[in-house]
Image 1 (cartoon, rainbow, N blue to C red):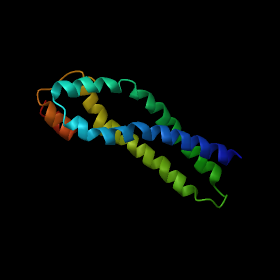
Image 2: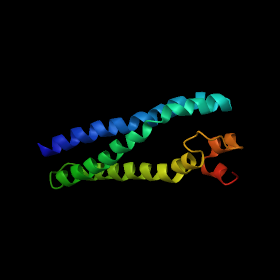
Image 3: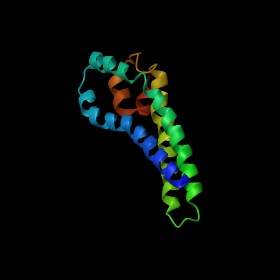
Length: 129
């Protein structure tokens, strides 16, 4: 029964984690075509997305718990463990690539001189600021 509760909780949390990532994928072509003023105006819609970090953290924890609960059941617990690791890697990628840009641009409220290069190349554009 505990495995089923952990599976359900993990599934819900992972679905919540995928929402902002999916939105970014589908909106990217439109945003990359925007001029500077429209692009920075659109950035304001992301102000509440930090709350998704709660779902990511809880998702990692529930996946670890689920992996532990599944040991010895004959079910492929290593797949769940791999999901926990990959979610952790995604979180690491955010802090290595996205968060530094958010800091430099003050969550995209300060327009850097080379904003197109910064937007297109992430951290590579940060070096020339």
